[in-house]
Length: 78
Length: 158
Image (cartoon, rainbow over all chains, first blue to last red; front, side, top):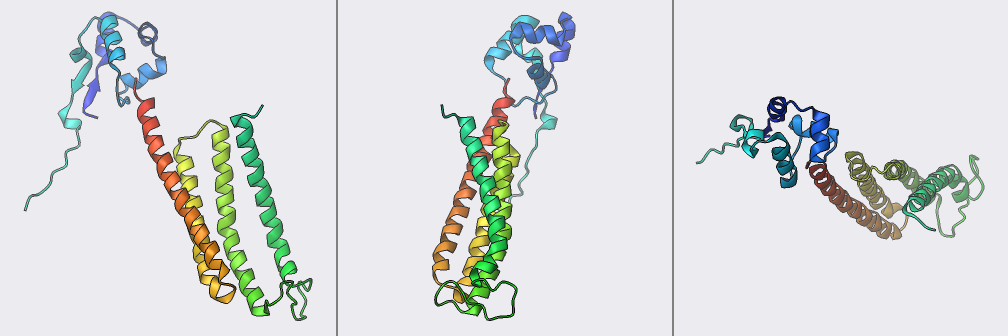
């Protein structure tokens, strides 16, 4: 999908493990893994807020828009 | 106390009993229709008044032709119920089972429509009922398919 989640960078900066992060923000390690591997289809504001609070960063540090990954449909006009 | 689990088990039992009855019927039907002259060269005396030998043969052909899609539908129903028992409700496998059941109903309707000129016009009503049930299953399949998408979206919302 077009939105990438850069959790690894933020986690490395704060030197926090996946298990600890999952526990502190109140989600399961499996769900955190879904986020980290960009398999998530949506993220709740409450989860994003918790991530930003624990990792001491802004949403823009975690979320990145990648235009190259978007599927673009081109229609030829007559 | 009656629970959802017991309800699923009851449905499973009924499905398996029906499968057994169908198998028994498939074996016994020629004997029943021929009035006890199964496998002999004697003129078949049908148990139903007014049925000619040709009608009995046509009825047997129709019945055995319907037997195959009916068994496929029943086994799909069994698989569907086993999945529900394992708490796997909104999954692709169940959508496939419902699709198979709906197509089996349409096939049965087509067979009965093909057979009614040789047997009895009552088969038109049975064919219509089978087609209606097939359509019903198709709509249920569409509903479960949509539910699978919603569940998928929900499961991947963190």
